[in-house]
Image 1: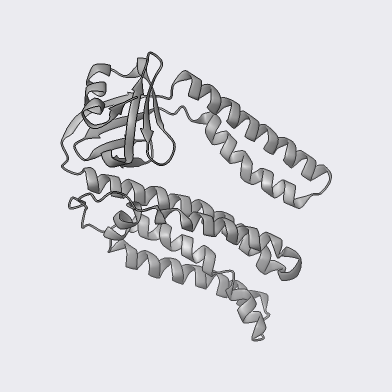
Image 2: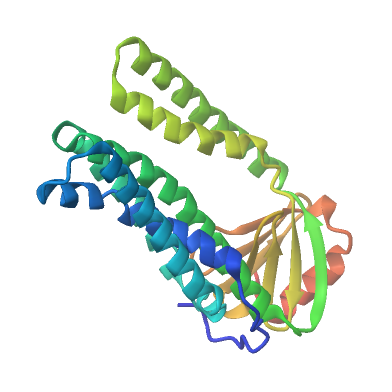
Length: 276
């Protein structure tokens, strides 16, 4: 749980995007189990099963989207806790179980596998969106102390390229071997790994840091993150990088040369954090 922070600035307007994405996530998880249930009660016609699958997905998505769209505080509350990430893990396990049951469950296993992979992506979207909405709420009206825009330090950039290249390379070779020797598990695993490596290769790491009285906000191209000052432990500044150490999680790193006003950034951090 994050340290307590006022979210009185949270918007009371509807949030159909978050509701729709959340609904699609639940719909993807709840639709495949409908098929074996219907088959057990004697419904085996392909058209009936197809309609049941599509209908379940549509109903769950619509109802969930409608309920959450009118309750934007749900996203803010979720974004304030680490509970936003378990749905991602649940979808991954769901897909793994579907894959493991391919030989026994047939079409249901195939659907569970692919729907689980899609749910994984939607789960990531839900987590990122809720975190962004929490950040917007907790920083609304907060006094801005300073801001800077910088990419990762050169050493971190090199590590990113090495790791991303290695993951993409292993995934490519693994997919090729799986295709040649008809190893389905290797092919599927490689397909899942490749996007992760590609993202690391194509992301420059440039983001904007906004220091406010409430904490430090990190603005990414498609997301916003917030760290209360109580979550940050110390900072270290040298000619290459500004490193802000978190009490839990990865450190925040910025290229010193790209910060417009290094002195102001250092003063702001020194007032609130210890200097390593």
